[in-house]
Image (cartoon, rainbow, N blue to C red; front, top):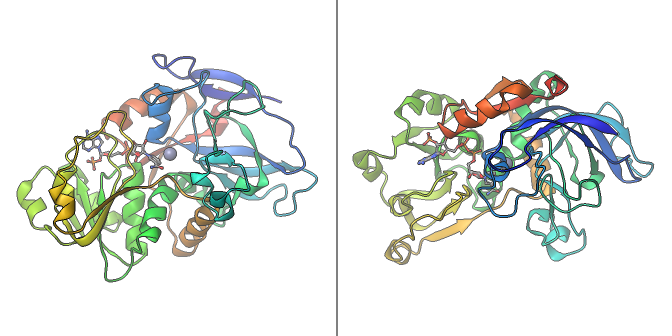
Length: 349
Ligand code: NAP
Ligand code: ZN
């Protein structure tokens, strides 16, 4: 089937309307009419070829929500009309140690929602800036929020699970002091989720103007990270820092805030490397510097169910398809509170 989409033909060109095709649903496939798709900073990195290996045409988008419109003959868990989501993964090998553990995100054969090899035209996956997507049932998530919350649920599929996964893995919860660095799409979800998990949350931002908003998101304290005095007040006191910043920066300033055995998890993926941290900042308090990649399918469902139960959604600004390029520019300036979401009904013009 031919559908409307938005994507780019090259890294130095803007996104434009495209016509793409989707496969007819196979036995295990779910066909979804996409209602909304979030705009992740990874979309911008990828479509502008800031990371290596972008395949063109590139249709980004991995924060997908919509309604099931058809299912394959072997699908029993979903039926037409169900509210569902698709995140960053649309396939994996399904038999390795990682897949067996529900950590498909670490499978060497993981197929990303866009920019991964596929048998479908044009030979690589095309993402959620499109009217429809066809996905193997294993990678389809059930959305239990109400239909009127759907647009604000979309960012949970990447920004939500990318912060949820490290918060859960490093046991964020009551009695723990958790820092979230960079209050953008990922960071604002990190603050909301860490707060909902019961942790004491410190939001670190370069933007003084986000102070009140970060408190409203659930932060107990807000630190403007350029202010040395405010930073020093938290020295050697934090259990876990989730660092979402999309640009290279001084990691030592944050490592120094970890208490003994504390961990800073990098989830931000800048196109150029951070300056190396001072090894003594790790040795002296047995601190760890770690990384984390999105999340597996079971933990994505766990996060969605937790959010439905606790009333957690993203703070979004809805945009039309023709505003996508402008939204990218605003995201680069930090001018978004806190996630742009595309109304996919506008893709047809
Ligand atoms: P975003 O909405 O643009 O937010 C990033 C935030 O980082 C900004 O709002 C800003 O927060 C801070 N920031 C940006 N540039 C900065 C700079 N030069 N110096 C200091 N702070 C800066 O982006 P996002 O969608 O949250 O994504 C963040 C990063 O995570 C991207 O690199 C993205 O590719 C990556 N990502 C990784 C995964 C994963 O699996 N690991 C998944 C999704 C995304 P303040 O104004 O508060 O300082
Ligand atoms: Zn993303």
